[in-house]
Length: 221
Image (tube, rainbow, N blue to C red; front, top):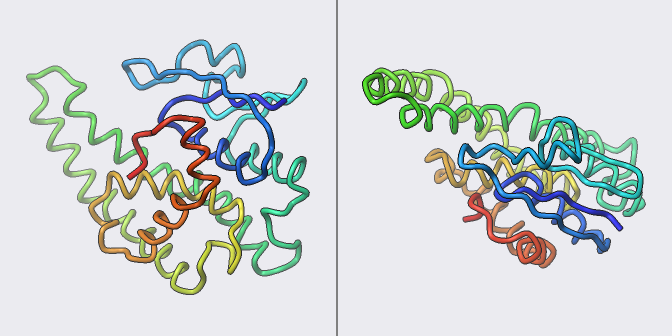
């Protein structure tokens, strides 16, 4: 039996969804974030970095969203949530499977951190922290995010899903950063294809079952 070590409001929600799409039985072991929003120390007993998502499957411990998704797709899905090797769809699938965490999520994480910064420093330097946060947001993060969102919007003008005409595990991997963007970035409101993508994934029965198993999370609209 697979065990998903599930941290609330985290990337591990994607892993529950992946398992529901594949119809694979699993157990959920729940962890709550500390007041600092960090994962609890108990997760270090599962994996040395103490991060989520992480799964255990027999004597195997697998961390990192993309690695877990690939493992589940190959081991339990016979590759059915990925396009056939050697096709253009497979190349796009591989790209977006890595792009989600490698390119898009770091920018969204920086936006979250700089947004929290003024409230996390002593009161007497908060005006300076607000200026720094606003400057980084305006000068770096919003232009970069705008470029990424326009790229993704154009991709979805060409096809319904990120890899092609069919839903794949790359769409599951892309869900977390795009739900985060929908919740945190005003730019997202002007992107109808990306908004429709988020609506489409959240309407999937397997997605809804995963929410029931994992619990409502803050990034969901």
